[in-house]
Amino acid sequence: MPWMLVSAALAHPVEGTWVLDASTEEVRATLDDATARATAEFNFLIRPVARQVLGRATNLCGVYAIAMQGQFELRCDDNTPLVRPLGRERTSTVPADGSEPFEHVLVLEDQAARLTLYGEHGERRNVYAADGDRLTLHAEVVSTWLDTPMTWTLSYRRAP
Image (cartoon, rainbow, N blue to C red):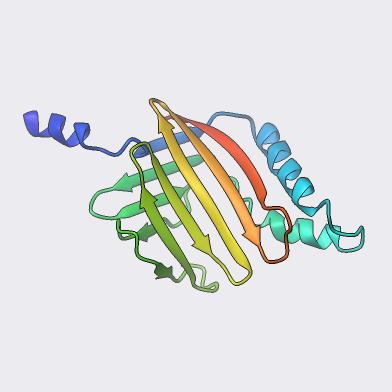
């Protein structure tokens, strides 16, 4: 079936199912370290509250499923996927859980997808960069409350 070969050859490198390539403990330590670095500038009374708030911005995905069949679809584990147009326009989404709507922008590059999520006090910038059977997530949280952005990097491998 030659059409299948053409279809597979045209797939974007970040498309597929990606499995976290570290233990939950290692990832939690990475995320805790990112939160601690970002909140280090706060005084000791505010720091615990800031860490709790930023901790919600560091959602842990054990499996990412990324598809681009006419639209961009990003699923974290078994959660409801984020579905948006493939273009660069700023789009609004109302979460399935009824929480506040948020806006997002997608920029596709040769080997990466840049997804920026906008919130009331800042934004989260995710870069999903593919290199063969490896996917690297570079995440950054920027906020009016932070002097230094919170950053972390996680590695994933393509699911068999």
